[in-house]
Length: 321
Image (cartoon, rainbow, N blue to C red; front, side, top):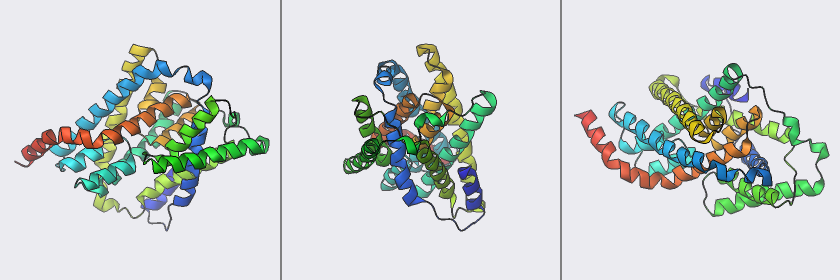
């Protein structure tokens, strides 16, 4: 709801302000919530996920190569802009790394904004209308009135310490990844079993949805319609290939196709884990796969681009011939 209304308002020229400070507060809360899903029982299943994680990495590299080749050979973008627009992970990191390598960071940002927005819009509606899923039970998170003061202090410490440490280590998605890792350690060791209350998580959903919609502030449809249409087509292609990859993982591992598809879907880390929570799908499984995807793609971006650069530049030259 927040995403749709702010998206329409942004494209209509409404005088909105992106809730950056609120998002800064809400994303670490989500990280703490995700870390709370790493109970000793859930961690016992991690070894079973190695095959799906490995296939996710192969899939992510393959999709990046295919989409970047399309953007170079058909759309006739330069190699750097094409590659960093095609990589399905690390929105801000891809724009920053791409800009440093001579890419057009405006095109990269627009492509990734539409990828995340469409994925967040398509996935829940698909599960609602075609899979018969009903929203998960948020009351399992508990209420603000029920949480003990000591548990609240521990959860707040996880958010603050995790964010500060991850930012100093320059980890990608530090606001989410740091609190998630610290919270996971705290919950796996039994320091606390508390989770962020449902009222705070509901507020986080609204803030993050609004922040996605506000990414289109100042965007003129007339000037960027072509890029937006290509981004929409690319997103649908990646979602379809993710579904195909999920089916292959299902054949190999026996994991449910719907769960794997959500783990492979090219949405943002925070957004996709929120969707998994709302749909009542294994949050730990989904969040682990998305964290690995983002970390891998961001870490590999400069190396992978150098390996593919020759192929992309030859395709770029051929398209201009």
